[in-house]
Image (cartoon, rainbow, N blue to C red; front, side, top):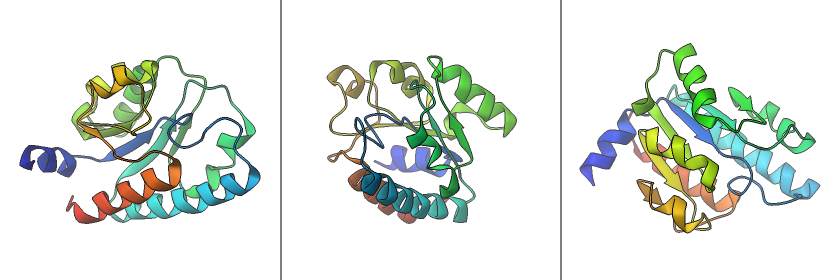
Length: 159
């Protein structure tokens, strides 16, 4: 467990996959409003620890993801089949290494980045294949539960 704590202490950037982690298919307006509030609160916790935040998704640009721009996220990268390439550009721009990256994903396209991330996480609803490659499988799924659990973890870690 102390090895994982040490990995968390190196985290300087948190990146989410979008579909399946933060939203399910066709979220309602109510769900988006709730997600904006939750994500905004989590991003504030990260900013207080000087941790960068973002989303990298293979999904195409859509209205839903851009409704999250005012949450304080530093990066929103869409339509990216090459998540590793996008993450690398963000890391380089911020003079960071993969060991500084916390990534949470749930799908097959997330595996290459999960393998490189310093801390890799999957929600409970992630594909079985994905769960084989992560440091932590959360006992929860759904944006509210995921963000609540991650908020608790990051509040407890001294970076």
